[in-house]
Amino acid sequence: MQTTDTPRALRVNEKAVNLDALQLEAAPQPEPTAPPGHAVVQVAAAAVNPSDVKAALGLMPQAVWPRTPGRDFAGTVVSGPTEWIGREVYGSGGDIGITRDGSHARFLVLPEAALHAKPQGISMDEAGSVGVPFVTAFEGFRRSGMPQAGQTVLVLGANGKVGQAAVQLASQAGARVIAVQRRAGPFEGFASGPVDVIDARHHADVGAQVRELTGGCGAHIVYNTVGSAYFEAANKAMAKGATQIFIATHERAVPFDIFAFYRGMHTFVGIDSLAMDCVASTAQLDAMREGFERGTLKPFPVARHFTLDEAMDAYRLVLSGSTDRVVLRP
Image (cartoon, rainbow, N blue to C red):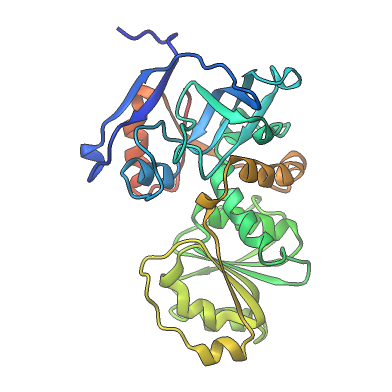
């Protein structure tokens, strides 16, 4: 019989057609030693992201088998470079839990270059759940020139975690933010400045509404977290010379007006956070650490906590489309 003191890790051994067929086991995990250039982190908290569940189901073509899932983490360094022993760290990665063993475990082995100090003033649960959403949002803005004061940033799908992170980052930069969503948003007291909210349930023409709010100018940056669902509206909402960022889509093929694209001098940017390994991803988080520490960036409230034995319940909740932030405590 397993004891609670025995280090364990979730394991997925093969692809599954759905969660009912998923074999997700909390297996014994020998305490690892850090190979040269690496460190071992004892995981205190690790978010369950939609991409974690999809990867466990075999929906990520680069995923390897068997492996331990989990991309985000916060914990304490217990083995590795002397100067890091005992320090609290946090991070994420497109390789962690996908092409290498991940954070849904007691211990996580990382390259030394992926170690970055956890922000002061936020909890392990909070630090372990900011990774994927904030890294994705930051990378989209980084490749778009970063929001600037005086610009208008439109966030489509602002209810989602990447959307919420994008709203905060744009607001922190001093940009005017317009958030499009289909239910009440969390932005009161959450963003650094005011956020104009468009409820897509009551505004059939979102693009026209954005034009009205901006005096006909449109948005300088459009962060499209839902892809094809808002593609036409997003294009209509773009200012001259604007950039649209894509991270996801419901349908691959969309109508595309090349004339409007080049006459608008528009730029489209695609972001795949899985292409960013743990070294690149944790560097992005470290670039945001000051914002978390001074409170201009706020971690997501963690709504549900689960043990490894309850991991299937956590995975089901995330796959159901719940916007609650779900965290495992290995």
